[in-house]
Length: 54
Image (tube, rainbow, N blue to C red; front, side, top):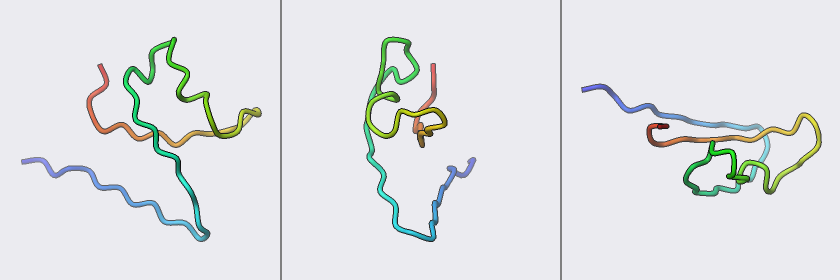
């Protein structure tokens, strides 16, 4: 049996992540990735997917 992937994120300073559960994340009409956080050029998002993308 294949072992499940494990992830660990360590930082030197405290961080805060806002977790949002959504469906159809990559659908053109879904603006979840655009809401919240910074919106200036170069802004980044941390995205975790826990199931297959169809």
